[in-house]
Length: 539
Image (cartoon, rainbow, N blue to C red; front, side, top):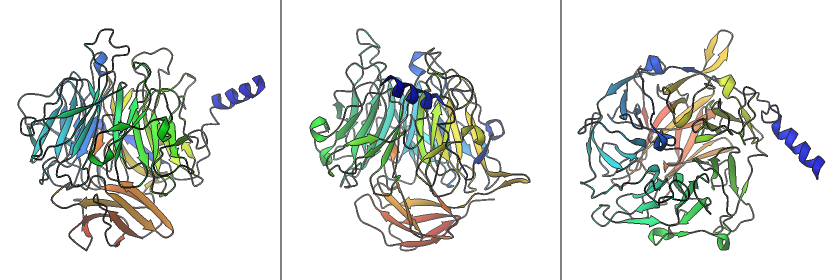
């Protein structure tokens, strides 16, 4: 056994083994935070070693996503998007327009609580979480009292929301970290996560603890078996829990939540869980999950022999070259530390890529000090190839939360990274670099959904985009990542396809008729309108 172990260790340690040859288009990013007018940092003591998120959403109804960025012990900030299509990304800082500044913020997620024309925000804090109700023109009002939402006093690090079947208002889930007041804290003193279901009046005056909880850092409602029921996936930090593991809660279609366990096929996995991302890599309708950690990233897929009601997963990160277990640049062989994870098509070739924010927690000597973010580009054979260095995102900063967004409406996804104790990074995607400049990638399609008067943004809907024999899917979600979320246009890379057929599985399970649309467009699909509408950004 010793020679076999030595061989495996040598292979894993080899820097060339982790980087499959990539013959596709590598996106070229340029850092533009100064040009964009974003000067902000996430700072603070122990409570702010984790968190550091942002929310991307349209707060002034111009369909150009704006930004709310956590500040830790510093005030959070709001930035209005002033970009023109295809030009430099620009923002204008704007007061949040609530009484006083909002500090102790770890992250935020956009959500429309009251089904009106204005997006709201769920703001996560060390202390009482806050609902900011959108009033229009990027102004907000504190709305905890309006919704009878207490907000708790925990150290909250994650959030997710879903409209359960026949519900008018969303069910909320909060991932909480360490109970700082418990004896022996922080070791083995994990705060309970919380499930908040609305009452008949749409208020949140009763919360349900999800016990046991294991110092959670990300949480996400997910239709894991493609049966139309959303359960709750939780990733947990082994650094502080005792006897904990990764969790999947069965919500029982509005009933009492119960953990899936070994009797159901759920296998205990113990990692430094920090972020969750989902996408359907093999087009079988059931999502795969990327789980960031210290050391190996997990890439889980449902076992093909598993029955529909049994969540039996296997890890395929190694076979897909997606472990991202140590820095791909420099000579530091210590393990990496992963945070925000997100699947997206950065080069419009129709294949999902995987972004992972990286950064040492706080001078932890057993983990890499210089730990650049990962950009794992999807290959035709289903594997991934590390291209973070070639793409220009390998800065020596400590990333936490992130936003993947087409901020300047040019059909190419940009990237914002919230860094701990260092300035926010904003990377504009310029496209393919050539000897004579930059050229766009393949074609794209951006889809916005408008549901009826309940769940206006169609959270939980599944978008299906077909080009030729290829079908891509995307589930509209609130949650996951690391303390960061977005709502708005959903981006699809189309490669060389000039047209696409789009169908929507709406949150109630009904399917739309096929929409036939042209590539390189922003398309608005209204449930009550049989025709697709095109939106053209200002230039």
